[in-house]
Image (cartoon, rainbow, N blue to C red; front, side):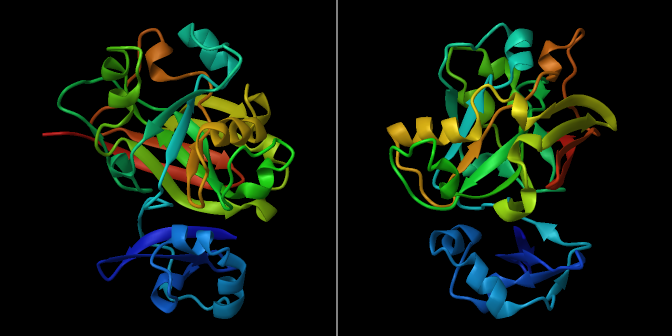
Length: 282
C-alpha cells in the first residue's frame, strides 16, 4: 500500500491511496491517530486499511501533500554511501556509515517549493531512498533488521554545499529551511519486492543527473539499521535516508546547482516520483 500525509480543509491528516490509484482514504479524519507516525507506532496500518476499505474521501489529483512523515522523532541521514559518490567527492571508505541528522522543520512536501537561500547559490540535489522504521529496537541485528521496517519513501537531501563544507560537520548545510524534500508517499514492504532493485533517477529540468540501484549501496539497509540502533533506539516513524549516488551537482565540471525556476524530480522505482520546484529566497 501507499500511505501519505496531506492537507485537507486546512488540517494536516494522513491516509492511503485506493486500489485504482485515483483516490485517498482519509484515515486521520476517521481514526484516533493524529499522524501517520502514530498509526505506525500502534502497528495499526493493516487494521485501519481493512476497517476503512477502498472508498476514497478525496481525489489524489490536486491533493496538497505534506512530508510523508510529518513528525519524525529522528531523521538519520547517511552520507557517502555509493562508491561513485565517494569517488567524486574523494571522501568515505572508512568502513562504517557516515551519519548526520536532519530536522523535520527543514522538510518540504511533494510539489512544495524547495528554497535556494539568500546566503548561498550552492543548493545541490541528492536523490535518496528513505527507509521508515515500523517497530522500535536497540542493538538490532542485521538478521532481524528488516522486521523493523514498515516501508520506503523518496528523499531529496537538498544540500547548501558552501555551508556544508565550512567545517567537518555537515549540519548547517543540511538543514536550511525548506531544502529536504520528502514524499510523495511511503510504499509498504510487501509491494516493493526485491529491495536491491529499487532504482533512483534524479532529473533536473528533465535532464538525468543521477541513476543507480540500491544494490550498489556501500552499507545496505540491514547494516544501516544495525549501526544506527547501536547508538540510539530506533522508534516507529524514524527515517533513515540511505545515501545518494554519484552525479551530484557540486562534483560536476562546471558545478550544477539548483536555482529559481528549476524543477527537480527524484524517481525511485517502484515507489514513484518526488517533484519539487525551486524558488530563490527574496
